[in-house]
Image (cartoon, rainbow, N blue to C red; front, side, top):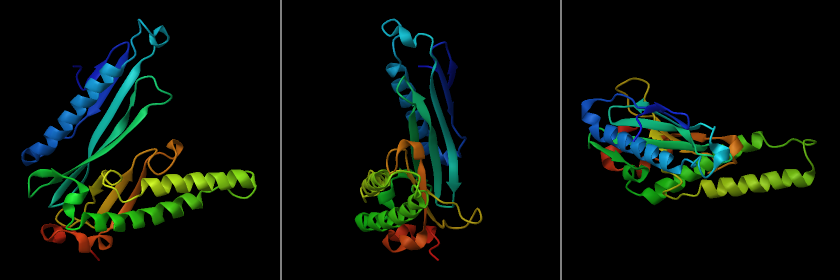
Length: 232
């Protein structure tokens, strides 16, 4: 398998991984596995120039950047972003996160934070939907920028994607980070929810994020995590 930084006539691979403390080995291992799987899938998906000569002189790219998004006394959050281009209409965007529970020594999913995950996701969904709706409506077509029918169609399509992408399902809320506090030792002020392209809006709008204050979900936290967030 190619290395993390490899260039040939047919492809370019550029993968950046952060250096983490020794006690975060499960997090490092998870990123390493993710990067290796991405490389393997990318190489296998490359068009064969012998059978598809139109791609013979095109260089395809796998670009992945893993960065520590935030650290608190309780969590390390890593965000993965990038793209994979194997000949489609446009590169496939990559957005993922890894949240490491430093006390438990393991990776966690969003639901793991809560005693009542369903109720917590509903609260997060309501907050995210309202925030994104205000944002999208602020950028809605203005009178004169399209026919009334076109404006109505834009709004209907926008609402359909937003409603579906913010439903309180586990999948819709699988990409998140725990925000850093005001100082290195401070508890987290909240979560950042990340919605990859296509989830809540058309591809042209890119990745969407929503910062959620801890007060929105604090009452749903498991007792073990209640002191790790500052709900003001």
